[in-house]
Image (cartoon, rainbow, N blue to C red; front, side, top):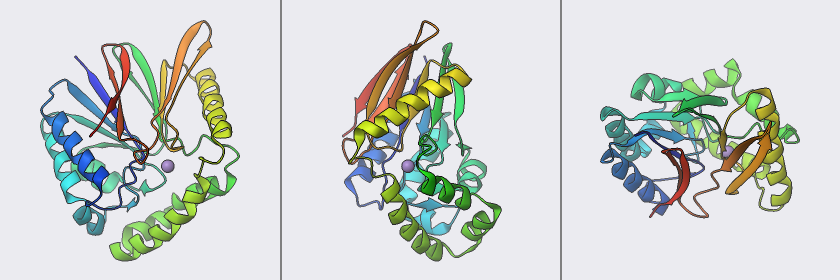
Length: 245
Ligand SMILES: [Mn+2]
């Protein structure tokens, strides 16, 4: 049996938060379920994590420890960088043994093709953010983020994170943003077919079905843990939402 679990947009600020504790309980619970083979972290798990600084590792140590145990037990962790957690490969991939992605990736499980992406590139109208995204991923920014002291990076990141929140404040116009992700799903499916698309970022939990070439396709958006802590599960060909407490 293969069981996949997807979470995103927890935006954890510190370990004292309720959602940090819910994440810990979740990570502990999946260690004892041999059926859970793959955990997908679909971005913005932390409200801020840049590079491989000790500052972040120390701050979020309990989460790292539980991820380590899941990995040690043979679990696979796929970490998609969001717009609040980036340049993760030094620590998460080369250090811990997760797979880190900075763009969409496609997987096949049980003959089911799944496209996964954080979703911060879905909205072509979001020109301000797309420019910022490009800038943060240049070699120049990457070198700064990796080499400045952790505290300085955290300070700069906090300011950037407050700015980028304006771009992603979709609650004011949910109709428009839902339309954006549905159009994105249709467009991406035309380019390269899949059965299911899983994204996050827009903070609106959503399930959308459409047809292409007579096939049923589903797009899921994982929503945001501030609304309800939840995971999306895929096992035995079925998708279900799992409420977390
Ligand atoms: Mn995001």
